Length: 267
Image (cartoon, one colour):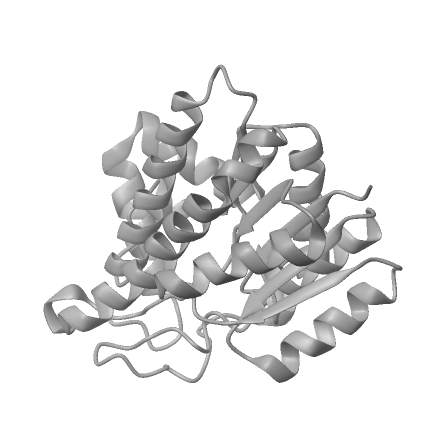
């Protein structure tokens, strides 16, 4: 019987690539996202690999949706072996000008979405000695200026998953925290501004960034090797290392890096 992988935020970007890579590796897949039309396209791509697919149109910030997604996949696919908590949103605004509803939205989607899905998949994952994956960020190791809500949510995800891993040292549950680094996707176009509206454009040259297919391949390799952490890109590895040993320098370097972005709030 084929193993089953669930992916949230599966309609585009890294989530789409993770779902297709899972299918290529022989997993039946459960896919969750808010956009039904794009989700069906991803489902068709997965089915072309000869696997079963279960799709659920829902929002990870809604607990009932996460529970229904897990239950549907168990019913239609027979179990859960891997859960990839990929769904997430970003932001770009200084905290002093940011409405608190923006911070709450980031936590609801990024952190609580991970908690909800993990909670309702956990029994199956424990039974199968499976894998829980959190798509985190360097922002979960180093707080980024103008990304307070995003960094807070990623720090929270890291803490949650590290605690979960430690609780399950004797159960066989595998927990991976994956930090892709800057990847070509729509996340920066959809990032919330200070009032909670999508900023509508990216401050980066997306064509120069790592492609989602390569990120998905690396993450799946890490799942199969049961790694604890995956930090992609040299820039990401250096950021974590510098912040660990030279935090004041990391602050200056991070500020200067963000200041150079297009339309940066810092001058």
